Image 1 (cartoon, rainbow, N blue to C red):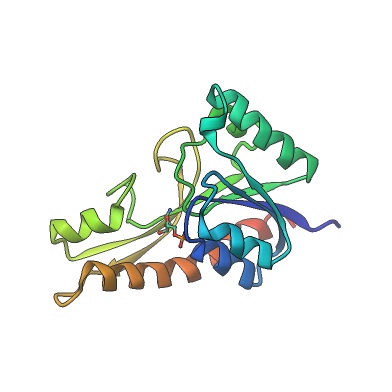
Image 2: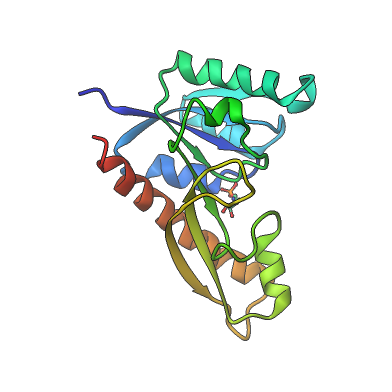
Length: 188
Ligand code: GRF
């Protein structure tokens, strides 16, 4: 049977992208889609020799045209699954309709708490005792899709925002490949 093919969508550093690439996941990641032309994740992807689509939404008149280019690329490479890893755009119907329940996202909070941007900073500033990491299926909302897995991450008294972020990212890098493997095993 052919190996499942996946694409990662990212906009920034790409530490979760790297964690997926380094993990023993039951799929082949063959494409990075990045919407930020200067994002560090692009160089990381090139080192792995995979296909890279850098596509800036501001070059397109509307979201449909932007996402149609992405879907065409996904289809050309026979992509089965999409993993969002710090992709800072909502996914619109053009992509969602082609990949229903085939798009995962990782978010640095215990959803439904702190959806959206700066989730780590907002949790830290609120002085709560614990936050978390969530992997969920993607729908049209902002971090609203069905939750697949969650891990609690404590906020210690001597934490800084940076130390908390580091701990959260460490959890992410373990949780995301693990959940991807669990989910994909059902399909292989
Ligand atoms: C991660 O915290 C992820 O949960 C969130 O964006 C961040 C991306 O970090 N969606 P990186 O680019 O993978 O290092």
